[in-house]
Amino acid sequence: MDNQAAIKKVRTKLKSAKSIAVLTGAGISADSGVPTFRGAEGLWKQYRAEELASPDAFARDPKLVWEWYSWRRELIATKVPNPAHEALVTMARQFPSFVLITQNVDGLHRKAGSEDIVEMHGNIWKVRCTKCSTMTDNHDLPIAYPPECTACGGMLRPHIVWFGESLDPQVMDQCMQALQSCDVLLVIGTSGVVHPAASFAMMAKGAGAYTVEINLDPTPSSGTMDTVINGKAKDVVPLLVS
Ligand code: NAD
Ligand code: ZN
Image 1 (tube, rainbow, N blue to C red):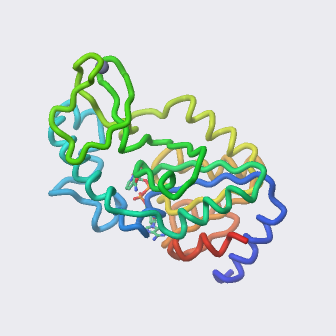
Image 2: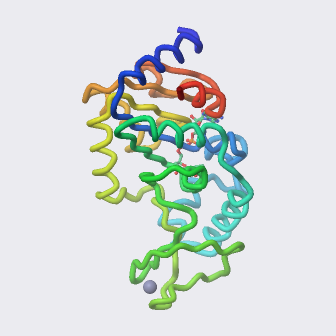
Image 3: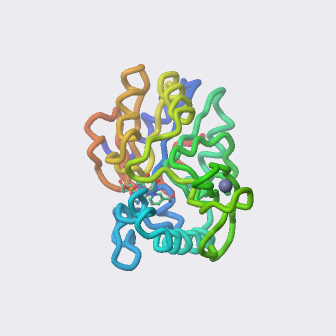
């Protein structure tokens, strides 16, 4: 199926749908200029994200990890939502049930005006105390080191789910509920290699949903989707909104 036919098919599916779930990944923010982890610009100094976004890395060298987050914050702060983020705000108003699940930590969905976002992997503008677990908003630019908890003086860490850490069970429940009850699932700009998000499409499909992948390139999940549209999120997603 070519893209035009695929888009028409998805629009028809959406017309009769009542409940929509959307899963977004780094690809949707790539169109705003936020680098993906696996893209050519995903490196900082000589480090790969996997070498910095982990509990081990933070235990070994918290300063280095904070420097990286400070750099990422500075970068994200200059970026604005793109037409794909905006189209999802419009879409949310058109269905009785609409759940937006994102793996992104950049806060661009919120900046676009989306509400009720399930931020699976946390948010780069939130910090959490490693001692007393108090969570607070923090927009410091740059982040002063060492960042200390105002409640107990403990070291703060980013409120982000790192590689090797498990998701908040409550967040996982919200995802499961949305996947099991949606008529259509849109998977936008995610590589399909980070678990558990990688298995979300299979779960939704198993529960009867029509699954759609929107990605610049084919992914390991493409074969299991009902429809695949290859293109930039900012070009494709707006075409799905009536
Ligand atoms: P990823 O970097 O592994 O994959 C990005 C996907 O987006 C790829 O499949 C790529 O083909 C696709 N893509 C790239 N440009 C696109 C475009 N313009 N339109 C549509 N698709 C495009 O990212 P991931 O699968 O989301 O997972 C990596 C993890 O890294 C996530 O857990 C996430 O928390 C984190 N991450 C977040 C951000 C962010 O918040 N913006 C950025 C990088 C990584
Ligand atoms: Zn504390």
